[in-house]
Image 1 (cartoon, rainbow, N blue to C red):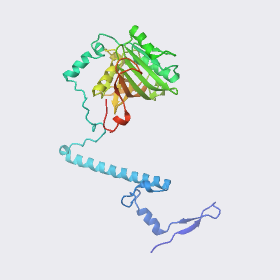
Image 2: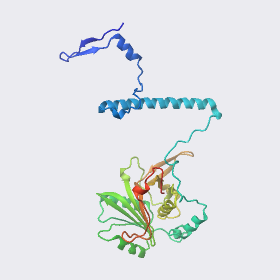
Image 3: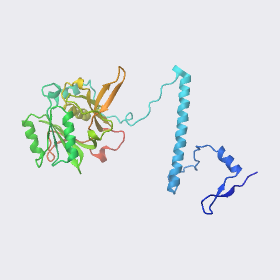
Image 4: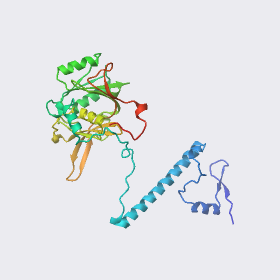
Length: 341
Protein backbone atom coordinates (compact mmCIF):
# COMPACT_ATOMS: atom_id res chain seq x y z
CA UNK A 1 0.00 0.00 0.00
CA UNK A 2 1.46 3.36 -1.03
CA UNK A 3 1.92 6.01 1.66
CA UNK A 4 1.42 9.62 0.55
CA UNK A 5 3.91 12.26 1.64
CA UNK A 6 2.96 14.90 4.21
CA UNK A 7 3.33 18.66 4.02
CA UNK A 8 5.12 20.30 6.94
CA UNK A 9 5.70 23.93 7.87
CA UNK A 10 9.36 25.04 7.83
CA UNK A 11 10.42 27.28 10.74
CA UNK A 12 11.19 30.88 9.80
CA UNK A 13 9.85 30.61 6.22
CA UNK A 14 6.68 32.72 6.59
CA UNK A 15 4.12 30.13 5.63
CA UNK A 16 6.21 28.15 3.13
CA UNK A 17 5.71 24.43 3.28
CA UNK A 18 7.90 21.52 2.27
CA UNK A 19 6.70 18.03 1.44
CA UNK A 20 8.22 15.08 3.31
CA UNK A 21 8.48 11.87 1.29
CA UNK A 22 6.26 9.00 2.26
CA UNK A 23 7.49 5.63 3.47
CA UNK A 24 7.23 4.05 0.02
CA UNK A 25 9.09 6.88 -1.65
CA UNK A 26 11.88 6.79 0.95
CA UNK A 27 12.38 3.04 0.44
CA UNK A 28 12.54 3.50 -3.32
CA UNK A 29 15.14 6.27 -2.96
CA UNK A 30 17.31 4.07 -0.72
CA UNK A 31 17.07 1.14 -3.12
CA UNK A 32 18.16 3.29 -6.10
CA UNK A 33 21.96 3.07 -6.77
CA UNK A 34 24.08 6.16 -6.33
CA UNK A 35 25.52 6.12 -9.86
CA UNK A 36 23.28 4.88 -12.58
CA UNK A 37 24.04 5.57 -16.22
CA UNK A 38 21.31 7.71 -17.74
CA UNK A 39 19.20 5.85 -20.25
CA UNK A 40 18.67 7.71 -23.50
CA UNK A 41 16.75 6.68 -26.63
CA UNK A 42 18.88 5.21 -29.43
CA UNK A 43 20.83 7.75 -31.53
CA UNK A 44 20.30 10.41 -28.84
CA UNK A 45 23.05 12.83 -27.89
CA UNK A 46 23.40 14.82 -24.69
CA UNK A 47 24.03 17.92 -26.80
CA UNK A 48 20.37 17.76 -27.93
CA UNK A 49 19.19 18.74 -24.44
CA UNK A 50 18.17 22.39 -24.71
CA UNK A 51 18.52 23.40 -21.07
CA UNK A 52 22.18 24.21 -20.39
CA UNK A 53 22.20 23.29 -16.70
CA UNK A 54 20.35 20.04 -17.34
CA UNK A 55 22.70 19.23 -20.22
CA UNK A 56 25.81 19.76 -18.07
CA UNK A 57 24.32 17.74 -15.23
CA UNK A 58 23.44 14.79 -17.49
CA UNK A 59 26.85 14.85 -19.15
CA UNK A 60 28.70 14.86 -15.83
CA UNK A 61 26.51 12.03 -14.58
CA UNK A 62 27.21 10.03 -17.73
CA UNK A 63 30.98 10.63 -17.43
CA UNK A 64 31.01 9.47 -13.79
CA UNK A 65 29.21 6.30 -14.77
CA UNK A 66 31.67 5.72 -17.63
CA UNK A 67 34.69 6.17 -15.34
CA UNK A 68 33.18 3.77 -12.82
CA UNK A 69 32.70 1.13 -15.52
CA UNK A 70 36.24 1.63 -16.85
CA UNK A 71 37.74 1.30 -13.35
CA UNK A 72 35.76 -1.89 -12.70
CA UNK A 73 36.90 -3.38 -16.02
CA UNK A 74 40.53 -2.44 -15.26
CA UNK A 75 40.41 -4.14 -11.84
CA UNK A 76 38.85 -7.21 -13.42
CA UNK A 77 41.67 -7.44 -16.00
CA UNK A 78 44.31 -7.05 -13.27
CA UNK A 79 42.79 -9.91 -11.26
CA UNK A 80 42.74 -12.10 -14.37
CA UNK A 81 46.41 -11.35 -15.09
CA UNK A 82 47.39 -12.10 -11.49
CA UNK A 83 45.50 -15.39 -11.66
CA UNK A 84 47.22 -16.42 -14.91
CA UNK A 85 50.67 -15.38 -13.68
CA UNK A 86 53.39 -16.07 -16.27
CA UNK A 87 50.80 -17.38 -18.73
CA UNK A 88 49.13 -13.98 -18.99
CA UNK A 89 49.16 -12.51 -22.53
CA UNK A 90 51.34 -9.42 -23.12
CA UNK A 91 49.70 -6.08 -22.51
CA UNK A 92 48.38 -4.41 -25.67
CA UNK A 93 50.29 -1.35 -26.85
CA UNK A 94 48.03 1.72 -26.61
CA UNK A 95 47.41 3.57 -29.86
CA UNK A 96 48.86 7.06 -29.92
CA UNK A 97 49.39 9.64 -32.63
CA UNK A 98 53.17 9.08 -32.39
CA UNK A 99 53.16 5.30 -32.94
CA UNK A 100 50.58 5.66 -35.74
CA UNK A 101 52.71 8.23 -37.53
CA UNK A 102 52.53 8.27 -41.34
CA UNK A 103 55.79 6.92 -42.75
CA UNK A 104 58.09 9.61 -44.13
CA UNK A 105 60.43 8.71 -47.00
CA UNK A 106 63.07 11.14 -45.70
CA UNK A 107 63.53 9.29 -42.39
CA UNK A 108 67.26 9.15 -41.61
CA UNK A 109 69.06 5.85 -41.12
CA UNK A 110 72.20 6.45 -39.00
CA UNK A 111 74.05 3.66 -40.82
CA UNK A 112 73.31 5.00 -44.31
CA UNK A 113 76.46 5.85 -46.27
CA UNK A 114 74.74 8.69 -48.13
CA UNK A 115 73.72 10.31 -44.84
CA UNK A 116 77.26 9.96 -43.49
CA UNK A 117 78.66 11.59 -46.65
CA UNK A 118 76.19 14.49 -46.39
CA UNK A 119 77.14 15.04 -42.75
CA UNK A 120 80.84 15.13 -43.65
CA UNK A 121 80.29 17.81 -46.30
CA UNK A 122 77.48 20.02 -44.93
CA UNK A 123 77.78 23.47 -43.34
CA UNK A 124 78.19 22.01 -39.82
CA UNK A 125 81.00 19.58 -40.66
CA UNK A 126 83.72 21.93 -39.39
CA UNK A 127 81.99 22.06 -36.00
CA UNK A 128 81.53 18.29 -35.67
CA UNK A 129 85.10 17.66 -36.81
CA UNK A 130 86.23 20.08 -34.05
CA UNK A 131 87.87 22.49 -36.47
CA UNK A 132 85.83 25.42 -35.13
CA UNK A 133 84.39 26.23 -31.72
CA UNK A 134 80.98 27.94 -31.43
CA UNK A 135 80.76 31.66 -30.77
CA UNK A 136 77.19 32.97 -30.62
CA UNK A 137 75.73 36.46 -30.99
CA UNK A 138 72.28 36.85 -29.41
CA UNK A 139 70.29 39.84 -30.55
CA UNK A 140 66.69 41.01 -30.66
CA UNK A 141 64.19 42.81 -32.83
CA UNK A 142 64.34 46.59 -33.00
CA UNK A 143 63.99 48.24 -29.56
CA UNK A 144 63.15 45.21 -27.39
CA UNK A 145 61.07 45.33 -24.21
CA UNK A 146 61.64 43.84 -20.75
CA UNK A 147 60.69 40.15 -21.21
CA UNK A 148 62.70 39.81 -24.42
CA UNK A 149 65.74 41.45 -22.85
CA UNK A 150 65.62 39.15 -19.82
CA UNK A 151 65.15 36.08 -22.05
CA UNK A 152 68.30 37.02 -24.00
CA UNK A 153 70.27 37.47 -20.79
CA UNK A 154 69.18 34.06 -19.48
CA UNK A 155 70.03 32.37 -22.80
CA UNK A 156 73.49 33.94 -22.63
CA UNK A 157 74.01 32.24 -19.25
CA UNK A 158 73.02 28.87 -20.71
CA UNK A 159 74.94 28.99 -24.01
CA UNK A 160 78.71 29.25 -23.38
CA UNK A 161 80.75 31.82 -25.28
CA UNK A 162 77.69 33.85 -26.27
CA UNK A 163 77.28 37.63 -26.36
CA UNK A 164 74.14 39.80 -26.23
CA UNK A 165 73.71 42.79 -28.50
CA UNK A 166 70.63 45.03 -28.46
CA UNK A 167 70.23 46.54 -31.89
CA UNK A 168 68.36 49.76 -32.47
CA UNK A 169 67.49 50.64 -36.03
CA UNK A 170 70.26 48.48 -37.56
CA UNK A 171 69.08 46.10 -40.29
CA UNK A 172 69.76 42.42 -39.79
CA UNK A 173 71.45 42.14 -43.20
CA UNK A 174 74.04 44.67 -41.96
CA UNK A 175 74.60 42.79 -38.71
CA UNK A 176 75.54 39.51 -40.44
CA UNK A 177 78.72 40.77 -42.22
CA UNK A 178 79.94 42.29 -38.97
CA UNK A 179 79.33 38.97 -37.18
CA UNK A 180 81.32 37.08 -39.83
CA UNK A 181 84.17 39.60 -39.63
CA UNK A 182 84.36 39.21 -35.84
CA UNK A 183 84.41 35.41 -35.87
CA UNK A 184 80.88 34.56 -34.75
CA UNK A 185 79.66 31.15 -35.89
CA UNK A 186 75.92 31.61 -35.23
CA UNK A 187 73.42 34.44 -35.00
CA UNK A 188 70.35 34.02 -32.80
CA UNK A 189 67.59 36.63 -33.12
CA UNK A 190 64.57 36.80 -30.79
CA UNK A 191 61.57 38.72 -32.12
CA UNK A 192 58.67 40.03 -30.09
CA UNK A 193 55.10 41.21 -30.53
CA UNK A 194 53.25 43.28 -27.91
CA UNK A 195 56.14 42.86 -25.46
CA UNK A 196 55.97 39.04 -25.73
CA UNK A 197 58.69 36.92 -27.47
CA UNK A 198 57.03 35.28 -30.46
CA UNK A 199 59.76 34.30 -32.93
CA UNK A 200 63.32 33.02 -33.21
CA UNK A 201 65.73 33.17 -36.15
CA UNK A 202 68.80 30.94 -36.06
CA UNK A 203 71.41 31.57 -38.75
CA UNK A 204 74.60 29.55 -39.07
CA UNK A 205 77.54 31.65 -40.24
CA UNK A 206 79.11 32.28 -42.65
CA UNK A 207 77.23 30.15 -45.22
CA UNK A 208 73.91 29.33 -43.55
CA UNK A 209 71.43 27.72 -43.35
CA UNK A 210 68.88 29.95 -41.60
CA UNK A 211 65.85 28.61 -39.71
CA UNK A 212 62.82 30.65 -38.73
CA UNK A 213 60.75 29.44 -35.76
CA UNK A 214 57.54 30.54 -34.14
CA UNK A 215 58.06 30.88 -30.38
CA UNK A 216 55.29 30.31 -27.85
CA UNK A 217 54.82 29.59 -24.13
CA UNK A 218 58.01 31.44 -23.19
CA UNK A 219 58.60 31.41 -19.42
CA UNK A 220 61.45 33.14 -17.66
CA UNK A 221 63.35 31.50 -14.82
CA UNK A 222 61.62 33.48 -12.08
CA UNK A 223 58.19 32.46 -13.43
CA UNK A 224 58.82 28.74 -12.89
CA UNK A 225 57.59 27.00 -9.76
CA UNK A 226 60.04 25.06 -7.59
CA UNK A 227 62.99 26.03 -9.77
CA UNK A 228 66.58 25.41 -8.71
CA UNK A 229 69.36 27.89 -8.13
CA UNK A 230 70.82 29.97 -10.94
CA UNK A 231 72.84 28.03 -13.55
CA UNK A 232 76.59 27.90 -13.18
CA UNK A 233 79.20 28.64 -15.85
CA UNK A 234 79.79 24.96 -16.59
CA UNK A 235 79.29 23.79 -20.18
CA UNK A 236 75.98 21.88 -20.24
CA UNK A 237 75.19 18.56 -21.83
CA UNK A 238 72.87 18.60 -24.87
CA UNK A 239 70.02 16.13 -25.51
CA UNK A 240 68.27 16.01 -28.90
CA UNK A 241 65.13 13.85 -29.07
CA UNK A 242 63.07 12.61 -32.05
CA UNK A 243 64.74 14.49 -34.92
CA UNK A 244 64.34 11.57 -37.31
CA UNK A 245 63.84 12.99 -40.84
CA UNK A 246 66.34 14.75 -43.09
CA UNK A 247 64.81 18.09 -42.18
CA UNK A 248 64.76 17.22 -38.48
CA UNK A 249 68.35 16.01 -38.69
CA UNK A 250 69.43 19.40 -40.07
CA UNK A 251 67.54 21.28 -37.33
CA UNK A 252 69.07 19.05 -34.66
CA UNK A 253 72.59 19.70 -35.96
CA UNK A 254 71.88 23.44 -35.90
CA UNK A 255 70.95 23.28 -32.22
CA UNK A 256 73.92 21.05 -31.40
CA UNK A 257 76.36 23.49 -33.03
CA UNK A 258 75.42 26.18 -30.47
CA UNK A 259 77.18 24.36 -27.62
CA UNK A 260 80.83 23.32 -27.21
CA UNK A 261 81.74 19.68 -27.80
CA UNK A 262 83.03 18.73 -24.37
CA UNK A 263 80.41 19.19 -21.63
CA UNK A 264 81.53 19.66 -18.04
CA UNK A 265 79.74 16.89 -16.17
CA UNK A 266 80.68 18.46 -12.83
CA UNK A 267 78.00 21.10 -13.36
CA UNK A 268 75.28 18.43 -13.90
CA UNK A 269 73.38 20.75 -16.27
CA UNK A 270 71.43 19.56 -19.33
CA UNK A 271 69.91 21.51 -22.23
CA UNK A 272 67.14 19.48 -23.88
CA UNK A 273 65.54 19.98 -27.31
CA UNK A 274 62.62 17.54 -27.42
CA UNK A 275 60.66 17.24 -30.66
CA UNK A 276 57.09 15.97 -30.34
CA UNK A 277 54.59 16.31 -33.19
CA UNK A 278 56.82 18.96 -34.83
CA UNK A 279 56.83 21.11 -31.68
CA UNK A 280 60.31 21.58 -30.20
CA UNK A 281 60.26 21.96 -26.41
CA UNK A 282 63.33 23.54 -24.82
CA UNK A 283 64.11 22.81 -21.17
CA UNK A 284 67.17 23.44 -19.01
CA UNK A 285 67.66 21.17 -15.96
CA UNK A 286 70.14 20.28 -13.27
CA UNK A 287 70.17 16.64 -12.16
CA UNK A 288 70.96 15.54 -8.61
CA UNK A 289 71.99 12.06 -7.47
CA UNK A 290 69.87 11.37 -4.40
CA UNK A 291 71.30 7.88 -3.92
CA UNK A 292 72.60 5.01 -6.03
CA UNK A 293 69.22 4.42 -7.71
CA UNK A 294 67.30 7.71 -7.62
CA UNK A 295 68.03 10.88 -9.57
CA UNK A 296 66.21 14.18 -9.07
CA UNK A 297 65.69 17.02 -11.56
CA UNK A 298 65.61 20.75 -10.96
CA UNK A 299 64.39 22.98 -13.77
CA UNK A 300 66.50 26.12 -13.98
CA UNK A 301 64.75 27.91 -16.85
CA UNK A 302 63.97 29.53 -19.14
CA UNK A 303 61.59 27.37 -21.16
CA UNK A 304 59.85 27.89 -24.50
CA UNK A 305 58.30 26.01 -27.43
CA UNK A 306 59.38 26.34 -31.08
CA UNK A 307 57.54 25.54 -34.30
CA UNK A 308 59.58 25.52 -37.53
CA UNK A 309 58.24 27.96 -40.12
CA UNK A 310 60.94 27.82 -42.80
CA UNK A 311 64.49 26.71 -43.57
CA UNK A 312 66.47 28.97 -45.88
CA UNK A 313 69.72 28.35 -47.73
CA UNK A 314 72.51 30.76 -46.90
CA UNK A 315 72.27 33.55 -44.36
CA UNK A 316 69.19 35.64 -43.61
CA UNK A 317 67.66 37.23 -46.71
CA UNK A 318 63.92 37.76 -46.55
CA UNK A 319 63.63 39.20 -50.07
CA UNK A 320 65.90 37.15 -52.34
CA UNK A 321 66.59 34.12 -50.16
CA UNK A 322 66.23 30.57 -51.49
CA UNK A 323 64.11 28.40 -49.22
CA UNK A 324 64.69 24.68 -48.77
CA UNK A 325 61.47 24.13 -46.82
CA UNK A 326 58.46 26.31 -45.98
CA UNK A 327 55.59 25.26 -43.76
CA UNK A 328 52.35 25.63 -45.74
CA UNK A 329 49.70 24.83 -43.21
CA UNK A 330 46.72 24.22 -45.52
CA UNK A 331 48.71 21.95 -47.83
CA UNK A 332 50.92 20.06 -45.38
CA UNK A 333 48.74 19.67 -42.28
CA UNK A 334 46.17 17.45 -43.96
CA UNK A 335 46.64 14.60 -41.45
CA UNK A 336 47.17 14.70 -37.69
CA UNK A 337 49.52 11.71 -38.00
CA UNK A 338 51.93 13.29 -40.49
CA UNK A 339 55.03 15.03 -39.12
CA UNK A 340 57.96 16.69 -40.89
CA UNK A 341 60.73 16.62 -38.25
